[in-house]
Length: 273
Image (cartoon, rainbow, N blue to C red; front, side, top):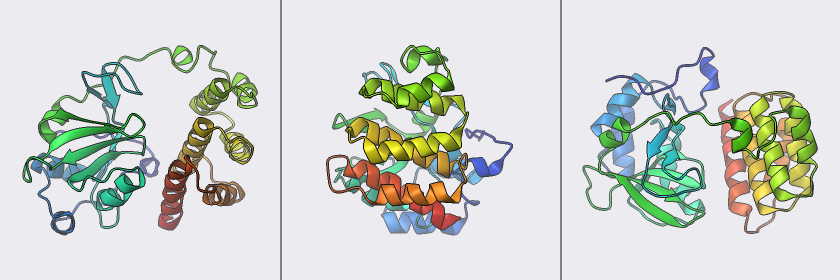
């Protein structure tokens, strides 16, 4: 079976790649979750135990928060004790999903891709969950069918996609100071995509989290901040401590689940390192 995973010169870049899969890992996971994992999933993870994907889109017949005709699937979870698929129930419960027959194989909160064992305990369907729209859609009958449909979507003009602004870090810094929600969100996106002055971006995101109470801005700032740190684009210990503090101090509110999940991802990363 051909690998579907992206290859990086710096092996530490791929935060979703786990240590080599063993027979014990498979047996433990199936016993712990009380399921039979798809054989194609296991064969892929024997090549590489999770990670970013070469082709990061799946065709669908419905509009969603990502596109009109496809969904994004950037990575696939691997199998190791106490790693992502073991945490399926916890992760889904955090986002208000109570279904017991779902096992997460990709996703970060707003959307999930799951093995769906509701109809068949031996051959799960593939289901897409959009927590913002409160929608659950079966998109493939089998895991193998999903893999065969992975593709790379056409490259769009990034400046148009994120708001029509020229891809300029200086422009992004201005937008991050805006009182307009859409402009601030565009600023965060443009700055992150520029890969410039990322330590300064992390500090700016912390400031935004401290001073801006808008739900969508809080979500974007927390997610981007954690991605900068877990991707090791930002390694400053003071910034990491500040990020941990601010993400852990958010009071109960409608955005609490988003911040809590970002806080958990950061804690997991720190504990692993």
